[in-house]
Image 1 (tube, rainbow, N blue to C red):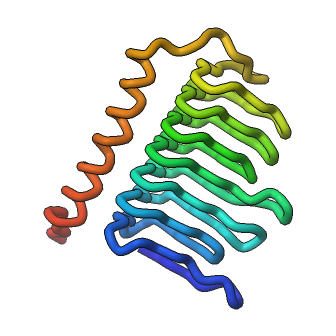
Image 2: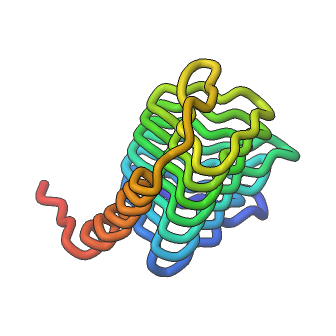
Length: 174
């Protein structure tokens, strides 16, 4: 893993966070308890603050960044899918951001929402809690059922366990 101070900006990483060895964490980044950052993910807090909530996971190849005045905040128990791009947005607790989704500055994703794979969320867009959000530009297509919301939570929990497994059992053999 590569953890960088940027000028006076230093990451704040809880003791039990899992960070894969090819991930980059730069500058004003806060990683809360039991969160995880996976292979080739980049969290770049060189312009404004990035916060990843407890038990959230940033999957392989995801990019998180912010512009001045647009901090990035990810709530508790959030899954950010492979190669997703999040920029200066707010993601509520319990959400899942799908593979290769793009979420731009000032956007707000309400808690317990699912952003579909490949969705494009434009600047300043605001979505209510418990939403299924898809398309380009993205729109709400329906409210999520209680069962679907439970599935989002189970997905995030599986990554808490997976992060703990990788931290304790992963062994490079070359």
